[in-house]
Amino acid sequence: MLVYQSIKSRFLGEVESRGIEYDIAKAYLSKTGRYAPDAEIRAWRHSLEAMARVLGRDDIAANAGIAIEFGIPQTSKRIDFLISGIGADGSRNVVIVELKQWSTSRVSEKDGILIANRGGRWETEGPHPSYQAWSYAALLNGFNEAVYDGGIELGPCAYLHNYIADGQVDDARYAPYIDRAPLFLRGKDEQERLAGFIKRHVHKGDDASLLFEIEAGRIRPSKMLADSIVGMLKGNPEFVLVDDQKTVYETCLAMARKASAKHKQVVIVRGGPGTGKSVVAINLLARLTRDGMLSKYVSRNAAPREVYKERLAGHLRKVEIGNLFGGSGSFIDTPPGTFGALIVDEAHRLNLKSGLYGNLGENQIAELIRSADCTIFFVDDDQVVTLADIGTAGPSTRSLTSSAPRSPTSSSHRSSAAADRTVFSPGWTMSLESGRPRTRRSIRPSSTSG
Image (tube, rainbow, N blue to C red; front, top):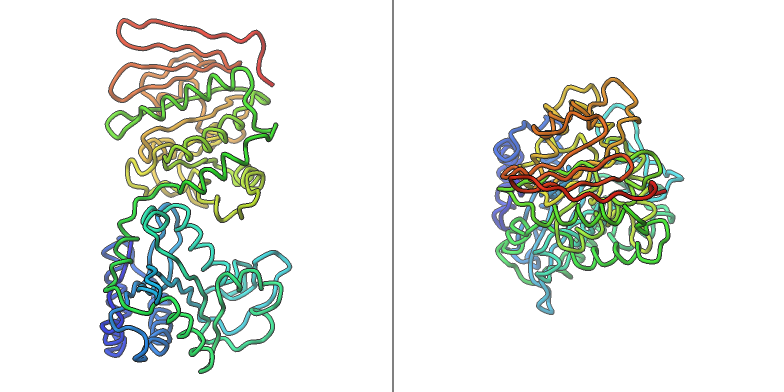
């Protein structure tokens, strides 16, 4: 989603008219259905005036593309400012600019983290602006087909137009991120440096065509990202599928592959502690991602997501795989069928509503099913912890699939178009029923998988 797009010459004219921030606020309301806070409108005015001073020179193409507030799909992140054009070598380039109004900050001992006032009353820890810009580029490189298949090269940077160098924001420990996304600060010399950075990427204008390509780009994982994740699992004994885990894994794959917007699939996998539910879930994420299906590992609590992001990181940084993981409360506004598959671990911990105060959305289970063609729930009824946990697979599962069995020791898959049903039991006992009249094929292990 692009809130604002134009070319440099028109952008400069709109800034000069001193009303561009209100035009952006109107566009933001139209595109998101939400009003921009007054503080954000003021920030747009000051930051866009600063960018206009950098771009208001004849040696930067007048028809270079300009975009403001680009929402990265499947995330809550927005890129502040983008400039598109053609390089001197004919390359198709987009510059990403992370804008900040800060004037002070403090170093944090945590990797890539900086302490600063980010709009509230108090200073808080958060990503360094160069890290932010680089991570946004990594997300587009990993998930936007127009970028990784269309040969669009991204040049991230950060511009803190009120900030005078003080050895904090530009401390040596942030060098790995500043090298990837150069940092530009307050001052005439810094403006010249930023203009030079832009000119290296944008030699000729493109009338914003690359920005439209990115906005229309299909959202799916890149082959490089998918192959990297699969490669990390191979040879790692922690992720090897054994016994019934393999059967469940293959069945879930089959359900996901036959799912569609018209024929949604819901699969419930039940198993007690130590049966390997999470191992199956991570393998499904890796395989479906490799198949080019937009998939996500979902859990209510952040702890399991962080554990598996760390274990999968390998030679990739967490930001490059972080978009494959999400919280169960982040699907309130997700359009129907956005994902090919959602893999919901610890589904017994799902809540009815989302948000810090439990007042957002309608029903997490319904929101997850609506958001994907195939939703796979991994459940252990014996691990329901609080009264707010609604994700049991017993009689209450009727809130999830209308034909769920009443037995508290079974769970079901149901197609929205047919009476197909896949049943998993706590010991990984699996039964398949399909068609009318129903026939049954049972596979029972001699012992529970460890």
